Length: 369
Ligand code: M6R
Image 1 (tube, rainbow, N blue to C red):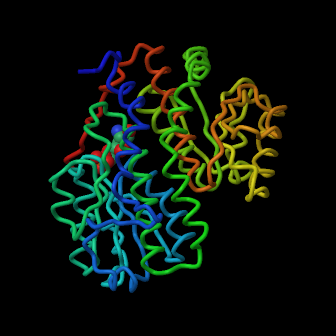
Image 2: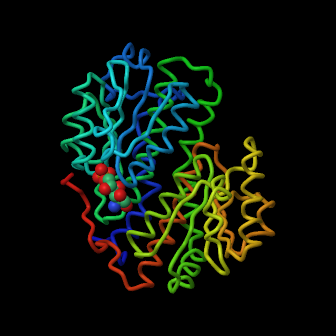
């Protein structure tokens, strides 16, 4: 049942190219238009929406944080992302023009369910992004966009995360299409790129041996830090979450721009710091800033583990370990940059003798609040 892999997690990591392709299947027509027939919320309601609120927990929350960048950029609708467990307790401002997106792999997470019930009570429309057919969250939502990752057994979410991202990108593009935003050309380019992204994920998977070796060499460490900017920031959070739950190590993700506001005090000799580097093209300001961050932490003794696009030579002098990912449009980078972090956490867990598929104290679906 594990298809020759030692753990479900390894199998599910390997299934990601297919999971991503399956989630795109039938949703983009020959002319590059999105056909999301399942989104049974009338176009008029989508056009009138004046705010998007994303609610989710854990890894699904990280997918939501990334979705915010895509939704705001492509649709110009303000988007908030909130931990489902915090949402209803702060008396959030919701109304008929609020579109709530509830992201959940299992469709049974109680925190997310309670948040979506609260949103509907306040008159908001709720759209679920979910991987489990017929589960409670889609049943209680106004509409659902299913991710087609197939069953995810390992407690640590991997392929569900990548497909949540794909579903959110599709949704953002669809909102842009329905509302006729000004990003038409960019949207077409992204759609074309999405169609090839499964192959890019496959390419990343083929180059993971050095990442595994690196993970094994760090098995005795207590702490690993993760830095990112823009969509790389939620990726850093996700890398840290994976390490906590699988390797039981202290791991934290930071926005690289925050370093100087506190976290840089943590840097000491030989501390492993993973840095997710944004694309050098287009957003070169961000890229330059993160290269300076890498220099700064390295000057203070950090062991820099740099995830950067192929062809990005600026990082080479400052990377103790360099992990290459294919170049993608800026907003899509998490689809490839997350993969090495999953492999890294899985290998570290194995090296530390931990139970990979069933980490201590955790359950696959959290059905209590
Ligand atoms: O089933 P859900 O997507 O609603 O689950 C949300 C979180 O419990 C889940 O993502 C959790 O954080 C994972 N174990 C992370 O790997």
